[in-house]
Structure formats: structure tokens, C-alpha cells
Amino acid sequence: MTRRRQIYEGSAKVLFEGPEPGTIVLYFKDDAVSRNPKRSGTITGKGVINNRISEFVMSRLGEVAIPTHFMRRLNMREQLVRKAEIIPIQVVVRNLVAGSLAERFGMEEGEPLSRSIVEFYYKDEKREDPMVMEEHITAFGWANHHEIDEMINLALRANDFMSGLFLGIGIRLVDFRLEFGRVWEGEQLRIIIADEISPDNCRLWDATTNEKLDIDRFRRDLGDVEDAYQEVARRLGILPESGPSDIQGPHLVQ
Amino acid sequence: MTRRRQIYEGSAKVLFEGPEPGTIVLYFKDDAVSRNPKRSGTITGKGVINNRISEFVMSRLGEVAIPTHFMRRLNMREQLVRKAEIIPIQVVVRNLVAGSLAERFGMEEGEPLSRSIVEFYYKDEKREDPMVMEEHITAFGWANHHEIDEMINLALRANDFMSGLFLGIGIRLVDFRLEFGRVWEGEQLRIIIADEISPDNCRLWDATTNEKLDIDRFRRDLGDVEDAYQEVARRLGILPESGPSDIQGPHLVQ
Image (cartoon, rainbow over all chains, first blue to last red; front, side, top):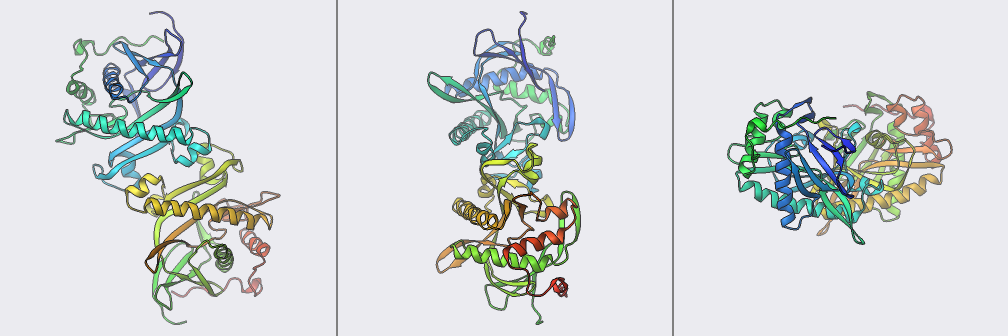
């Protein structure tokens, strides 16, 4: 492993400078944290599986002209992505009531929404990523109206596409969280999907049993967390080449 | 006092059926509550003053064709208003950073905003009036897009007008909260400003000293709460006819 500069370490990933200018290497960790309830731990093999799931979903999105930062997978736990100027807004798309939406309005989890809802959260861990309105985003200069429109447009397109993708393998896409970044293409500033798309930031329920196949199993201490992640990968047809013994993968040397 | 049917009792007002169909009597109490920090108490004479201030501001708004529910003041603590179907959304307009906005993003109180911000909160005391986006409002049927546009339009017009009105008497309108209702005019559904406009729901700072002249004096236990409310009324030229000895007014018989 050649020496390389670490740019950032988050709860689930480490970012390194990529081999070429304008690229970044994402290293997927097994670490998991939950804010509500507060909990932190490890989901064995999560990094390996999320690396594969995110590769798979972002590749498919690219094929329907929904631009993402994904370039190629490098190994079990790493992928190469385009370096983008990250917009400090998390875009959440919801198809069914779940999680904080249920809490906020006292609604039942699983209640269908009359239409998909798009929400914004300001990325600020110290303040637990507060929900914000378009008003705050533009007034504080986090993104302009055009960029917000483009994020909504891409998020809704991704929602349609991914809802179909997952339903095809018996999984309901309840909601998910996206991040976006800006990249220059010639003279043109373009908005692309960044970060990852995986059971860490998608609520995925079995379409028949409503069994949770995502990070909520960890957050709510429901057990069988590793199995749930593997089940999603298995249904997508992308379980890692090597057997489950290898899934733990090499630990990150820091 | 003739018998009349009480419709609702809130923290600061009691609503009675009005003498004619389509009207309501608002009775202004001296009670005050604060959610953060939790505090409840009495601000002597507040009801009398707010009745006058709300009468004054809403009358002036009406004169510039910003429709409100206000019809006429009945006595020291009561006013007659049009009965409207209340939209369960509080619309907040902010000109400077203060209160929950400062907390939410770790900003300094008093920091100017590059432009006015309009926020929505869902009226649900049990859930402490959570902030919502246009997305929630339309998806859950609390108001439609046209109504939201009209609320924003009226709120921004009211903001301009009231900013001028208060600045003329040396007071900065930092932010304020409005409620809206629907009324039928012939075949036409119309959105009008409802509730009250007073130091209970406007942040008012002395333009020179930044001294708070509003409910924050009570919420933050700054003292001189009664004086602050009276100072606003005095500057508007509308201190109650009778002296301060009468300001306590008759207590509400329930």
C-alpha cells in the first residue's frame, strides 16, 4: 500500500487523496454509529458490502444518466470517485413514514405518503444535522435555487429508479439520504450524487414481511444486522466474490 | 356580561362565539408561557396592551390591503374578529438571527440575514410545533401550494410594512410569527392573517440599544416585562385610555 494523504475520516468511511488529480479514494469501514438512540459499534463486513452495493447502485444510476461521483471499485473496501465540492445539505426522499418523520408528527411507521416527500438537512454534526428549508439554504449561501432544483430533480429521479430496482428484488425503498457535490465540466458547473448509497443511508424493508434490511437493525438493536446487509447484497446478485470468511477484510492501518 | 359559548382557551387568549354568525370574540389574557426554557406566569396588563397593539397593527395592515381577521375592538381585553378556518401552520419571518435560529445553527443573535427568511412550523403543541417544509404541508394536506404562496406573499408584505412601522418609532422588527385562516368571500376562498400581532409573537428590539421589548424578557427572565410591553404601546401612541391602575382589567370569569 503506497503512502497517501488522508483527507477526512467519518463514522463509516475514510477519504484519501486519489492517484490522479480530481479523484478521491473512499475506504469503507465496518464502524456504525447511531444518534438516536446513541449507540456505536461495528457491523462485521459492512464496509465490504456497502462498497459493493454503492458501486452497483451508482453504476446503474449512471446508466440512466443520473450522474454520480462513482468511477470504479479498487478493491474489497475501496472505490475511486470524482472529487466534488460537497454541498453541505443532505437530501432525504421519503416514500413511507418512518424514523424521524414518524416521531416528528406522531405518525405510524409504514404509513404510505400521498406522494414522495423531499427534505433537507444541514450537515452539521455538532448540531445533529438540523432540518432546514430552502429558505435557509439560499439565505446562508449553502446552495442556490438552481442547485436546489437540480438536487430535487436528481433525488426524485433516483427515487423512481431505485424504487424499481429494489422492488424487483422484493425490497421496498422506504426512504434514503443523498449527498451532492459540484464538479466542473468544461465551463459548466454540474451537480452529481456523491457519498454512498447503501443500507447505511437507505431504509430497505422486505416487501412481503416488512422486515428491516438496513441500519435501523443496528440503531434499534434488532439483531441480525450483518445478515440483513448480506441479504440485500445477495438479492442484488453482488455478494463479494470471496466467501464470508474474507468479508471482514483487512483492517485499516492508520 | 351575557352568556356565550367558549370555543377554545389557549395560553394567551380565550375564544368565544361572536354575537353574529361568522364572528369570534378574542379575549386577551395576561398569562404567559415559555417552552424553552419552560416557564409560565403572568405579565400584568399584557392582555390589555396586546389587544390594543394587535388592533393597531392589524388596522394599519388592512389600510394597505393586507387582509386580516380583525373587525373591531370591543373593550379593554376583547376584540371581534372574522371566523376563519385556521391553517395549522405558523409562518415565521426573520430579519435578524435570533431565538431558535441562533440555536439551530450556532449563530450569533443579532447577526443580520442577507435577506428575510420565511419558515413554517406545524401547530402541534404536543410535539412543540415542529418546523416543517412546504413538502410536508402539501403532502399532509395542511395547505395547498397556492395557499402557501399566498401566505408567503402576505407574510413578506406584512414584514415590509411592519418593519417600517416599527422603525418609525425606533424599534427593529427582528422576527415575527403569523397565523392564517381561510374565509369565503362569495365564491372566492381567501387567505387572511389571523390570531394576534403583538410583543407575544414579534421580536422587537430598541433600534439604538438593542434592548428587547418583547416576550423574550419573560422567557429569559430579564425583568421589566410589563414596562417593555407598555413601552411598545406608548411609542405606537396607543397606551390604554385609563391609567396604569386600570391596566390589570377585569379578570376573566370562566
